[in-house]
Length: 211
Ligand SMILES: *[C@@H]1O[C@H](CO)[C@@H](O)[C@H](O)[C@H]1NC(C)=O
Ligand SMILES: *[C@@H]1O[C@H](CO)[C@@H](O)[C@H](O)[C@H]1NC(C)=O
Ligand SMILES: *[C@@H]1O[C@H](CO)[C@@H](O)[C@H](O)[C@H]1NC(C)=O
Ligand SMILES: *[C@@H]1O[C@H](CO)[C@@H](O)[C@H](O)[C@H]1NC(C)=O
Ligand SMILES: *[C@@H]1O[C@H](CO)[C@@H](O)[C@H](O)[C@H]1NC(C)=O
Ligand SMILES: *[C@@H]1O[C@H](CO)[C@@H](O)[C@H](O)[C@H]1NC(C)=O
Ligand SMILES: *[C@@H]1O[C@H](CO)[C@@H](O)[C@H](O)[C@H]1NC(C)=O
Ligand SMILES: [Cu+2]
Image (cartoon, rainbow, N blue to C red; front, side, top):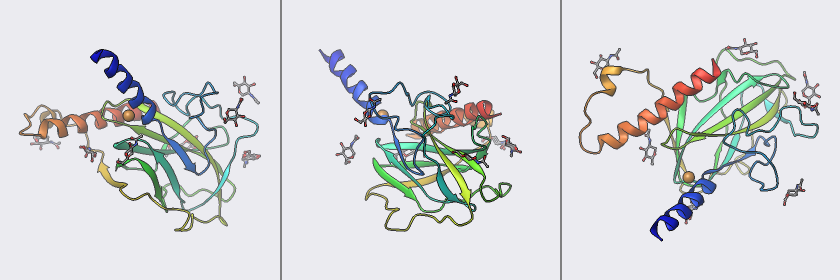
């Protein structure tokens, strides 16, 4: 009985952990039950890059808004970008410090800066990949296709509202330091170190995938 209840809770938890991308419009709604899409699948939840009718949002050439629906008490969020019309290489990070978002609901970041080395020309196609993770380090994916436009603007503050109770803090992606990771944590440091390690191994995993 207890085991069954636990399994049901675990399933509910998994379902709730999935997320949506409201802006830029995602390639496909991967939360619908009547598709074969699966957010656990790298790089874009199994949504192919050559769908005929998928949307492509005009996005400012100096960086624009991103609006996500998160369904978890807290979530790590990583945003990557790849250039081209059918992207396979998401080799720019838009979150050199990934976000630890607390709260479930809508998070809207009005203007996400591009890395300094990325200066796309007007009309350049690209894809933004959104990766979320919890403490376990396993990741969920969604993609949104964009065209960089000099005439495009970021969402207005009215359209870019973050729900009450949602906050995010940037987390530095630290270099691995084996002497530091073997140090014995004190008090609740164990949890914090564990979470950091999960995040760190995810970052390392992503780095390998993206390399
Ligand atoms: C899947 O469900 C959505 C929403 O219920 C509907 O709009 C869409 O047409 C359905 N797609 C297919 C292929 O049945
Ligand atoms: C998309 O690409 C896949 C695999 O490369 C191919 O099988 C499929 O025919 C393509 N679809 C379209 C609409 O071009
Ligand atoms: C990223 O990949 C694109 C090709 O997909 C390449 O043109 C570009 O130079 C790469 N940029 C970096 C920073 O690796
Ligand atoms: C989202 O947060 C609210 C308030 O904390 C809570 O009542 C609700 O159950 C949460 N929903 C999910 C899917 O976790
Ligand atoms: C950008 O993608 C659209 C399809 O979404 C395509 O029609 C257009 O030719 C692409 N632009 C470039 C410069 O490749
Ligand atoms: C690694 O961590 C140890 C212990 O915290 C510290 O003494 C050392 O300076 C660190 N090394 C680097 C390269 O950060
Ligand atoms: C992220 O936030 C959650 C909840 O606020 C917290 O428990 C967790 O330790 C944070 N993770 C990091 C790496 O700071
Ligand atoms: Cu969850």
